[in-house]
Image (cartoon, rainbow, N blue to C red):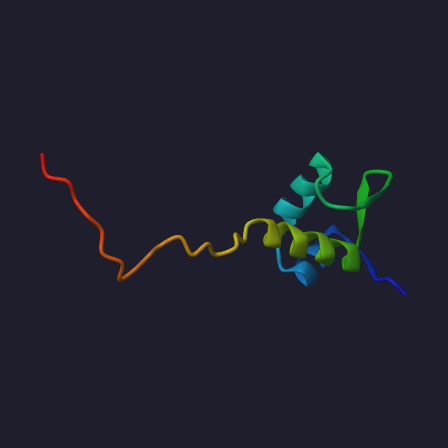
Length: 76
């Protein structure tokens, strides 16, 4: 069964500030439900979203450098 929480408890469990969570909810960035003027968060969905969002910022390491290879420098 999925765990649902209001903004204060969800922010504590997700490890982010209430302000940030509220802002993301208002902008529609993070999955949530509305009940009147309250936001209800499914903790598992939010954790998955934040994990995927964090992985977008990670770039694979490209080994373009050729350390130890001699190269010519043209002198004019």
